[in-house]
Length: 181
Image (cartoon, rainbow, N blue to C red; front, side):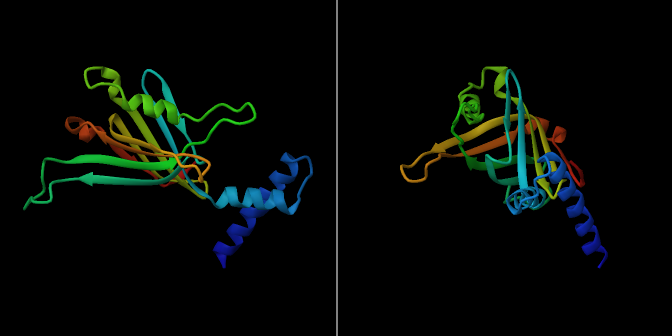
């Protein structure tokens, strides 16, 4: 019962904000939009290097974090790696909006190993109900694979980004979470 009261209180605050923000509009569409926004789970990706790459909740659809160790080990291995598999959609620019940063991801994937910029600082946030569930930070991330696919019926393309933390710097990777946005 206490949880129900907290949810009801949060929704009433959200509705009051909607009413104020929309100039008094409290139509069912506006309320539904903000309710979905409040309960929606999403992801934010920030990649920092020579340029900044930002992808948000509109782009990223799924994320898989993996701690990678050899499967044939009989004891805890010192050969530990961390990876992220990020899948999402490419959003095209319309009505004067700027394009998303998926093009920058594609360009990052082409940076050769000889250049220091192939390693970049990556931060991924998993957000649910205005709470950061996980915040994964790779200070020396590099692209293992990057794929884009397009079709004539989907209307928008999709991408798959597979990144790793540099193995000799695995101890610098961090996982946080459990705090408000």
